[in-house]
Each structure stands twice: as C-alpha cells, then as structure tokens.
Length: 366
Ligand SMILES: Nc1ncnc2c1ncn2[C@@H]1O[C@H](COP(=O)(O)OP(=O)(O)OP(=O)(O)O)[C@@H](O)[C@H]1O
Ligand SMILES: [Mg+2]
Image (cartoon, rainbow, N blue to C red):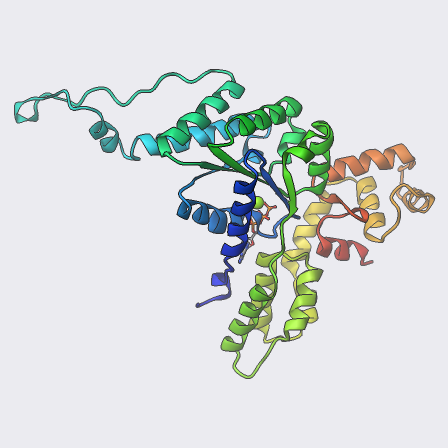
C-alpha cells in the first residue's frame, strides 16, 4: 500500500450474506439503503459482483439515475449490453469470426464471412422486452442473472413509476429461477416516496435492509498508514471513530481528511475535521451550494440545521428577518419539498434533517 488513496476495504462476507438471503427467497429482491457517499456503488462493483461471478451468476449493473425519465429502459439497456457481450465478442473481428464462414476467395480478393450474428427482434414495449431479455440472458449464460439496480429511488420519481415497479415486480417474480435482484438507493426520502407511490406492495416485495457503514477495519488502515508515514506519531482509533461519525461515515471524505492531517502533521482528528471544514476549497463548495438556492430556502436550511421544527412559529419568526420573505407555513412546506428534491435535505428517523452533517455544521456557524 503506497498512499491513502489505495486504502480500500473489501466485504466478501457481507456480499456472501446477501447472496444467501437472495437465494433463500427467490423472487424477492434485496433493497439496500444508506445515505449518500457511504460506499453502496463501490460495494456492488467490488464485492457483490465478483462474489456473484464466483457463484456462477452473471452480474448486470444499471444506474437508474442516468436515465431518470425512463428507468425501465435503463434496465433493458443494461441487459441488452450483457446479452451482446455474451453472444458476440467485443471486437468486430470477433463478431465476424463467430458467424459461419460462407466463402473465402483466392488471394483474399473476395472474402465473404457471412452475415453478422442476428437474433429475433425483441418486443417493442419496455415491459415485454424486460421479460424476454431476462429469459434470453439466463439461457445464454446458462445460469442465474444478478440484476443490480443502483439509485432505485429514481423509480419513485419517474412519471409512470407505479406501473414500472409493478412490471419489475411481475418479471422478477415470474422469472425467479433465472434472475435475482439487488436494489440500492441513497435517499430515505426517495425510498419513502417509492413506497408510497407504489402503495404498500414494495414493502412485501423487497427485503429492505440498512446497508452497513464501514467500521474500524477501514479506520485502522488509515491509522496504520498514517503511522507508517509519520513514525512516532499516532492517531487514536477512538478519535477516528468520532470523526467518522461526525462526517456521516463517508470513506472518501475521511481519507481526504486524514491525508490532509498527514500533510500537516496533525494527529488530533477533531482539528483535522475542523481544518478541512474551514479550508478555502470546502468553503467555496458550500458557498456555491448556497448560491444555488434563494434567500428563503437558505433561511429554512439554517433553521433546520439549528434543530428548529421546520413548521414551527419559531421558524416563521426567524424567517421574517429575511427581506420580502412573508413566511407562511405553506411557503416553508414547499421550500422543504424543493430542498429535499435537490438532495440538501433528507428525511430520517428523527424528522427532516440536513443531508450532509458537515454542511449542517457549516450552516450553524454565524
Ligand atoms: N469499501 C471501501 N473502501 C474504501 N473506500 C471506499 C469503500 N467504499 C467506498 N469508498 C470510497 O467512497 C467513495 C464513495 O463511494 P460510493 O460511490 O460507492 O458511494 P455511494 O454510497 O454509492 O454514493 P452515492 O450515494 O453518491 O451514489 C468511493 O469513490 C470510494 O473512494
Ligand atoms: Mg452510488
């Protein structure tokens, strides 16, 4: 290991556990939910997919957010790509060579290698295509497909999300011998909407699981590397734990902070976090974020960061200080909706909160 950036934690046991859950209940996808930037996608890519391959499955990944208005198309596209990869090798030469050679002329003057591989046209409707693709893919692979749908809360936001969820559910159930599915989502708010849009079925349909944060294993690697770089200096694990919690368990961010601590020779984690928060770079990012919302929304963010009940009289009173604000409950409500959609606010067990705990800390400061 050479730099802080190379520090990675693998979680094969967690992946194995999830595959176990999936095979124990065919037709029921797993839905893994956790806040932003804690390592969901990394896990799918580095842990779950490889483990699935070892078990003879064919992992297929689709990011639904990339195709927000038509998520089902994104799923189909990913399946089509996987099918192409199985049927025809990546290069053109491979494509041609796989077909039957019809005729080869002397001196190579007329080389006719036959038509490129062709397959029966797939149904046009996205729902039918999904069904057909799953079947074809499993048959071609001669094994189960593991469908990994990232940012699945997008389904709850799509115009015809309800029917898409119904389709997905029907296909996953009908083809349960051929396909297993894992969903991941980052927004608790999106998850709530997904459940409500679809009516209760999603709850019974998927097994909802809180995806676990990284823990001491990751923090120990950071501390060990720090020690290697600075012999004689030591970061306390307990301080790292507190810091990691403070920043919302985001591994890339923690790595940045410890890297900066290392550059400055700092071993006090609180100071490291403080330095990071007050760095020009970080302040510029937060200021830009605040510039993207209007003064009223800004006021609402500050009130929430300070722990005020968003729809309380106290909040309205604070907002009155903003010129031209004329705060009303309904104005605050629509501001909150907007801020949730943009990801600045999220809904948690304790109510509406600022999504990023460090940003909340920044908002609290005068
Ligand atoms: N197991 C891990 N070990 C080390 N670093 C990790 C690990 N998992 C994630 N990271 C780091 O955290 C960053 C964010 O991870 P990732 O993109 O997987 O988060 P996410 O939960 O999918 O975020 P988002 O909600 O924004 O999609 C990664 O780029 C990676 O640098
Ligand atoms: Mg992700």
